[in-house]
Image: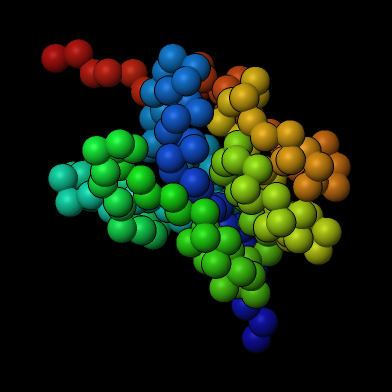
Length: 168
């Protein structure tokens, strides 16, 4: 019996977080996971993060929301603060899982993923590039895709995906 392939998401968490915050709002990560599942049939949503022990409560919450977390150790410096670039981990995981998914969604506005997105698009494996900010994203993303339907933006979904603080 042949296994049914499903859609996977590969999320650059730093780019997602900063891209949304730059627009003056906060993403509701629980709603975002539901959106990915319902709109794009995403069964596995990898989130790539720099690991910091003090963020354990956040990691536990993300797991409850059904994100699969992939960590990279962070480097702390007085000059640059915290650095935890996850680009290589995201590309590696997308290629390791290549035979396991029908299509991949890449959540980023970063042009560093040009080669991955181009490869997925040319081979019919790209579901969508989902960039956080419609006004600020790399022009390389549009060059990597085969059709305009392969890119979408989170910014127009603010009314649905914005985190709204609960009042007691």
